Image (tube, rainbow, N blue to C red):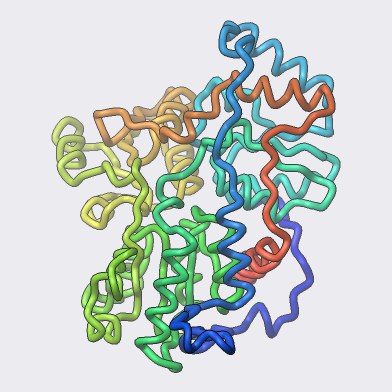
Length: 420
């Protein structure tokens, strides 16, 4: 990482804390017992999380017709003109999975966490336009300064994996686990960066932490130093692959199905578990299969297979290299010319590597091209519309995280940053 994140001053004892609430948090308000009401997990913070989740808008205002009918050349001209007018007040962030028609306008490109750090390190930029998906814009808002506004060109650009772990489902899971496993449950919640701000805040509030695909192993080590179990969400594959690499056997992992009592597990299975995995996955990386690796090696015996840890275990086990998006870029870029690579990640990144590294053969492991469909919703027309409004002094599609949620989410992020 080339930039230092903006952080809040948090006491060491908070950063280093274990779970702050032990056991069940079921509360029955005075006078309601006779009415039969039971308010499970009804503390003020939980209600704040729920309210914040419900307040998130992912409904995009229809574009004015003029933008829909503009040619690519006209859209490009609008965007370049707006960038010139706004100057240093504007900073456009482009995620690696974005289409080329968007990435060419980015002032910085990277994965979600790197981009959030870079945005926070640009205090002169009052407008941060994040060409990514919703949880990325939330993270940028959490880490950015008070003078900065984060804008998502298309509010409907979400993340199917992040959506697989709703605030209510995670709260219900925690309530059941802490109730059934008792006061000494020893659970440390760990959320992947690819999650809603409310879940990062949940982890911060309960002694937990955030991880990326680059530091998941170090983060799990941190968690096991503070507890006996980890609740890992929302991506089961990253959690499973990381735990296996640490030597944790499958017999000590349980897969939690949201909506089912005890996640569809027996109490005994949960008591034996060291890692409780959430039944979530990436719709892109979940497409990769062992047969694709076999086909790639059959057609080119010298090919190297490199995949993202969000891929299923069976794929990761057969790959030559496994790592984050930044790791994949580094390994393929630094490889000698003449080498051949089959890459298990999003197609826009793979195609960009092939274009920028003509001395190497770089192909997608999946022959049936599957882009990140929600990322693809950030079309140049939406970017032009958002920037034109900024030129006119109007901020559209601002992503702003609730103050309390942001505070606790930042604590979880700061714990991650403090992990060696």
